[in-house]
Image (cartoon, rainbow, N blue to C red):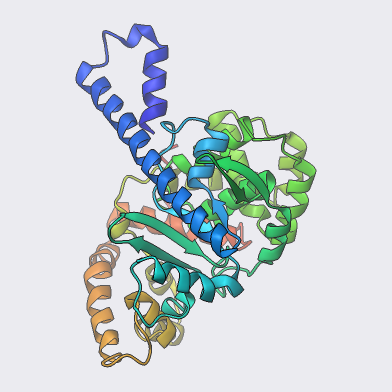
Length: 384
């Protein structure tokens, strides 16, 4: 968010003698780096769109570059990571053949990218020489963890925009706003997403490519089963960034008991969590430590230590029929111990910071699942 901070300082002349010049210089360099990175991403997107057009493979652009051009309307204003693309599931074999022929980093015998990550709905696609990074999706939700949606309805409602100087299909305005809310609230449960996720929602509300049909958004939100997360993201955007969300929309989407501000505080705590994602407290660890039944705890422990072979294949990007596949379970146990044992130790020792993190995860998870009655831990204090 260097662009937004720099704009704020530039607009407030009285900060000129207060903010150190070295800070302003670093902000300027960060903004310049964002611009150059996005220009490279544009070039990579143009190349991919040309390939797909020639092969007659439909594609939709999600988030990132669409937000930068269609919403922020300034390539310096929002950094883009991977280029997120959505393809139809039935097109994935043809797409796989196409990207293999053009040198993307895939095993040579791959016939369908989906088979490389059978437990996921996306795949990181990299070109080793052009250094282009794409996140290829064939579904918007990860089932069975998340409710499956009918992607075809998103395709039928999609719209054409000019992105990177080329006609490019993307989600319609209402669906894009819904998807941004779903991605932050339902998919990530607000953990480690950072404040930019909220800013994306606020900017889309303030500067949509065309007027938002709010009645349509409410109807779609309910149809998809995303209304709890959508309400919370819209309400947070209204509270903290002044978004002009029609009150009737918030009233219609607000779940029973949803106006308890405690959930808003918890979500904001998660959004601003100043911790590396590699050190996250995983929801399964929280559930394991919370479960009182020894039998259920043992079942959950066994399930996570020895998951389905498809999940192991996805984690290590290999085939279930590859030589030595069973040894990957041993390797996974070692990785789990290294990653999660320190947090389990801190929970056992009743570390206050980790206990607060654990309670926040429990409250948000419980609320998102429809149980607003989860009691806050004694002594928990929101930073808000």
